[in-house]
Image (tube, rainbow, N blue to C red; front, side):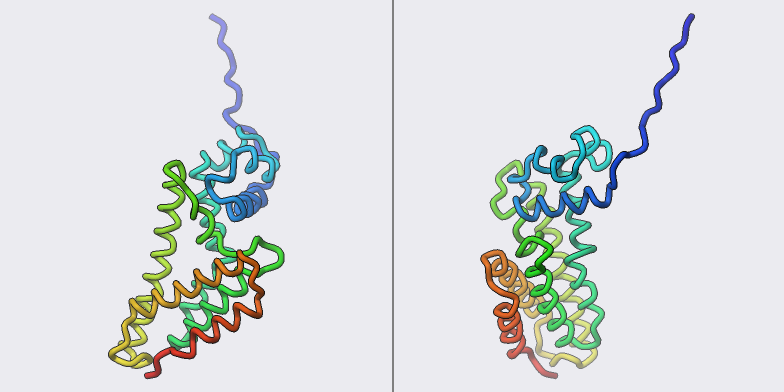
Amino acid sequence: METRRKAPIGRPRGFDADEALERAVRVFWEQGYEGASLTDLTSAMGITRTSMYAAFGNKEDLFRKALERYAEGPASYGDRALAEPTARQVATAFLNGSVRATTRPDWPAGCFGVQASLAAGDLGRPARDALIAWRNEGTSCLCDRFQRAVDEGDLPPDADPGLLARYIMTVANGIAVQAASGATREDLQHVADMALRSWPSA
């Protein structure tokens, strides 16, 4: 009985997966989850659908990987802000980082985490839920950091860490929306500075 040799299951990728993912981030950022078609994505990434599925999974999987890349890249200011020594410096670094990240000339205006699924319908629910979870995690991390500031006496004992975290996140998201609408970095920096004038003192 003649036996057939099995072909290799996979071939070496003929593309830079990191570069392709960076391009996918840009497409989702500019067009949103539902607005970004597979053709848009694969054309921007310079790969076929077969290669996309093999390397990144389906569209939802690709979106989640793109969100992770965004969090590690343009949105990494959030993690750096949490390491600042005082609550005021955390808030300042977070809002200033938001201004810079949403007005970078080499990236789309606004925030991937705010814009990518704002108009998503039922088909975009997984993306919308992923972004809601991501934004809520950011708020929770700020809340924990501000609670520590209360415990350490850096914030007054009657300060509400949850409210402060929600305040900072709301201002940051508003900055992102304004940036997407064409507001300048200078104008948005003034907004960030104004938001911090009412910061509670210990």
